[in-house]
Length: 511
Image (tube, rainbow, N blue to C red; front, side, top):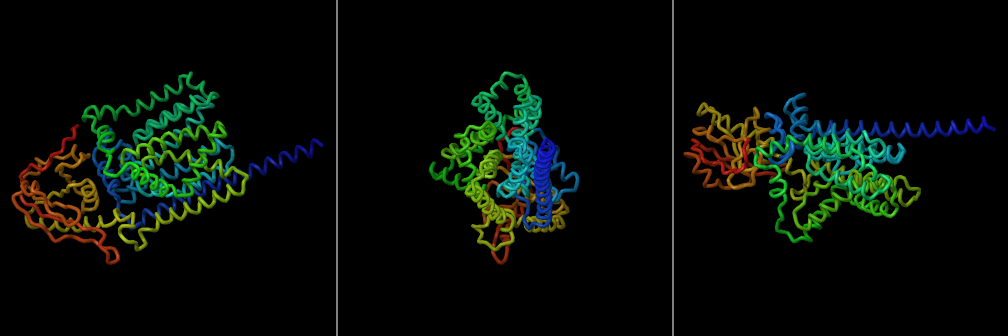
């Protein structure tokens, strides 16, 4: 009797191991295929760099800093690394986003397997994450968000493992520090983990050990260069983040709240968002330890931004990292359930998420009205750069001197820096706008006597302050750029002769 029983037990274990190996292999295959398809997309996409991508690239090609006026430094470091490998092309600017999203998917798999002890749910987590619209956007557009998502996921994963082995706290502190160098929103994670430890008695003993505090100190040491840079620069990054970036706007509080709520439905996808919120409510009632850890890594940041939307204009992507652990809760509740209804809802949510993500990738190839096309801000820059290049070369042939190029907004400034031939230094005048990184770098006195080319969006008039700063000038016909016989962008271009000085009114601190 012992022999057959032993054989049956081994057989069952082998079957379970084979199933686990299959799901693990499927998860890895999904990560590889998704990364490969995204590489093809960023190679062949008709979309130009976004204004933020171009701005971060402009930071990355200059001597790297410990911080920037509007963002922490990690995004510049990342772009600098990849463009250093392959050159200053849009493909290599965005390559980091593809690789970072693949790494985040791998961390998601490892977390779920560690939490729920099943590779099947690990595969479902990778699948769910890669079907979400916000994750797909961050997988092909290189901003601070994919970096924040990677380090948020790593900190969640390492912190969960640290509940059983305190040495993992040090890796959690390392990833938290690097995350803070990516996006300040990671400051919510130590607060979330502290709330979990206070709430769950079984793990509260961690607060009586030295490792969590040393990990927090490690993250602070990693972040110290940002603090030192800000101390030298009048705390301009923190002033921007807490005073400039949070603008109340003119809308009524309830309108802002519903606008923000709608943005969450769109970037997560409706059924998946509903499923995540419902799952979070369910696990509070059940009070299972592993679910509560994920709950506390999700709810505080979401509640903060939902309440903040009652008083401020909140961008839809600001709390995006919080949905990482929320997605894990959704996968555990719905994917781990034996209820056919829950399984059906999960697959319906994934199908809807796929449709939303397909729209993200395919909309550049679809003829949509301008107001309904979310990618309209990512087209026309290459053509503008070509046109400004022609104007600059024409002026240089007449005077023998290359004119400097400038605009009144960082978006146009950064895009021209990338798309004008030879990628020259482009200036961003400050006639009363909010300060940005260009205000720390610009030396207009060195340009006195030179000619310039001034570019403004739309069919606009030149400001009197700009007229006074030059001896003379002329306006070129408005430049319209088309897609399928429809105007998608218009710009006004001005030739300016003999710069006299007196353009910048920025008040940002200097290094």
